[in-house]
Length: 279
Image (cartoon, rainbow, N blue to C red):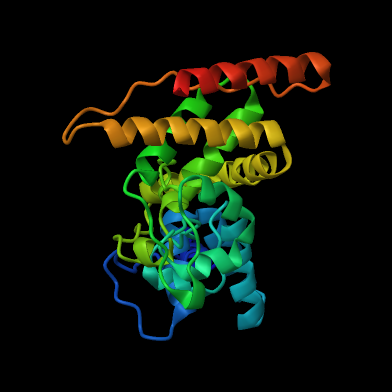
């Protein structure tokens, strides 16, 4: 075999690519997660596949091999806790919230003051809270307004509202586990993997902005006060709208958040004007 070029090449193929004859629609034997992992990585992550085959030839034990595959895929931005998750499509973590779920207020007490501005309060004994009809509309309009601000801190406050009211445009931020589970999972192909990595990376950035935005609204009295004033203005306008009428086009004011006496003076002046506009 070693002296025959054709047989030597066939031997190399069999050694380096043991699944070279496996069809794309191959049905894995139940419980054979490693074979499934090799098939998926061969088609989507050839470098990981080659590394796994190399470890198999070196006699690496199965648990270490499983850790290798999961670790390498996770390094690419797709969190994979175990090979058994591969069978359910590309794993995508849900970060969205459901404001009607009582448990949300127990696990996120830091948002209580913000949601209270929208008339949303947790109910005792685990009852579902009452969500005003215009809360989601107001939250979306305020988030869209905050995105357009030059100050990155206000933009982060916008992402915080977008997370709370499920209007960020990123499915992982807008849907909770239950809602995301009802969606068709992404298959293991190159196009879907590229899309998954994109929305996962975007979600990670958004979550950092959400955290910073919540901190701003909690710790900055002026920012919280302006949010309160703008929520009241929007609620008044939405309440006065006729049925099937278009959403109001209000000029929403956001103050300068710079410190110092001058910054405070400007903020107070803008707050006074905002109250006059509301009146």
